[in-house]
Image (tube, rainbow, N blue to C red; front, side):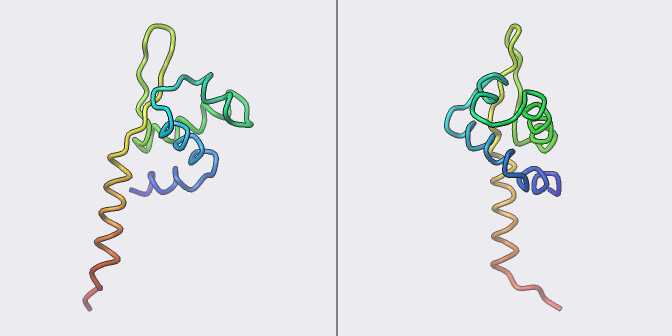
Length: 90
């Protein structure tokens, strides 16, 4: 779960996730056009998101398309709501 929060901590990675939420299945070139960073920078951020299982890459021919995986976010919100709703017992 720490990897998810680490991945979400960066504004550039959140921007990538927002872009994928608007239009799922984008290539690296499409994502690069939307952000003010180099191709290498986008690749680096996508790797962190992939390692946290927030983005799923799929290769089709020569291109690699990136898809949003909402399941880890749902798990975090479920865990977070359980923690905030139930007081700790001592």
